[in-house]
Image 1: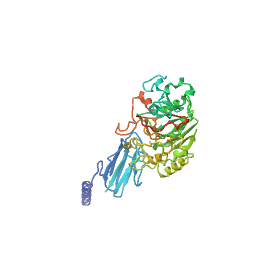
Image 2: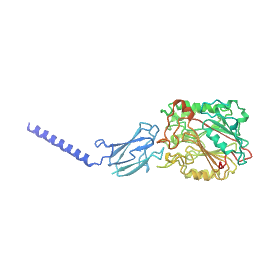
Image 3: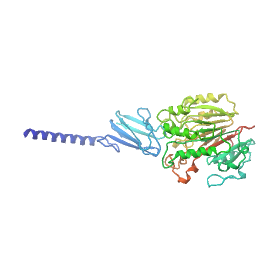
Image 4: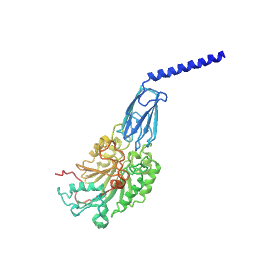
Length: 121
Length: 330
């Protein structure tokens, strides 16, 4: 009985500590628009021949997901060819996880006037 | 004359143009007028240096000799096979209608030029469908250049496997027909961020060589997908290095540039060069700056066919230099 209570107490304390850790993490991380602290994904919408938001700032380890809502296909291609999607038709998506800090300009290789930027901190 | 449905221009006797300002047999004002009608389905013929034009709708009654030039061909563009959205849920039907129009011409064009965006997503079944439909065209031959929608995902390999026989690099080539020199250029590959269409160094060197030894009296027709002049750079409607290409053609008395990509007709005369863009057979796009973006434009269903079309080109070699040379209107 005594052991069980001690164990329970242990678990409760651990639980609280873990919860506190999460809270601390959520408060300290710069969160970009659309970022879910738990899922670590940022959404970028492709529509009307534009990327929205055109520039995003994220932490290393974040995944960016581009979804094409336009009625014409588009691509997402890094200027320095570090990443690139195939042609995305309407409602198709492409995701890339950024592990290294840096600035990653990208564009649509079909309509090169469409440009965007991912800044990874 | 053909009946008017409010869209196809009805031409009267006064429209057979006879003014010759430059004493070279060319009526520049008439030519531009004719080119404007070409988008709505007009048939322009140069005969003895004089431009004559006829609405495609009313050609049945014309004497064939009246309509025959020395070289005639048809341009279609932007079939976007595979597209299916409100702007046009059935691009098969409209491409077939364009082919029917070609077949109904009183003089069968010798060949067909497709200025690109044959497919919508570079898919095999899309290319297959266009090839299938084109079999019903009465023309003897067909020539292609790719649009940006034809070279997705594979750097244009599939496009070249299908249409690139005898071409070089990205798919450029030239050929001669009835004394006219045709040059097919590729300006939709290796596009750079923030940029426009691009021809590239290798292609430009090839082109310089290709035309170097040609006589300046040979008429030149260049065809490429994206316009070779700056129609509207904000929407990518232009080609970065086209000035270099056009520079190689300065010596020629007659240069005609045929493009697609913008899904509407536009024309411009500059020096010895006449530029003309074709309508799409799939869907229209807005006029430059008239909408937030250059995407497919929805029009009322009963108006769709009036904004799609083909372009017919007729050239006659006479004593004078061919068709177009530069002149101010005043």
